[in-house]
Image (tube, rainbow, N blue to C red):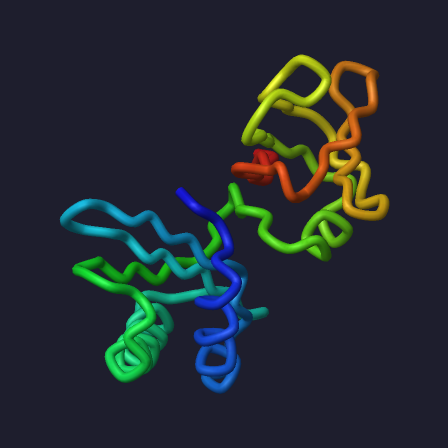
Length: 151
């Protein structure tokens, strides 16, 4: 899943904010016949099915007019959930102190997957402690990052 297509975020964010929600992130996966556009929204009071429907209706109309995606695709609007995906640099600072699972596009220090404590953000790098060792993970090389829920 391609995370955070910048032009889609720029197009969608004002509409989502206008409805009173935070746009957490945007994922788009194109396919030869069908693609998937997934939008994550949040609100301080939580997200209900009705919230997702309202945003879906608003964004669907916007996408029909602007037509930024060629071909057929499904639009999915969701809460970020307990295993919240991290998209923007400020997310890594905001959720410092929580456990995270990260997958990189390529190898970083000989590995691609990192599960550990998110220590925060330093420049353009997420700092993650895995088994007592700190790793600086370049944000531009992150394929996917999610919080690990604490139960």
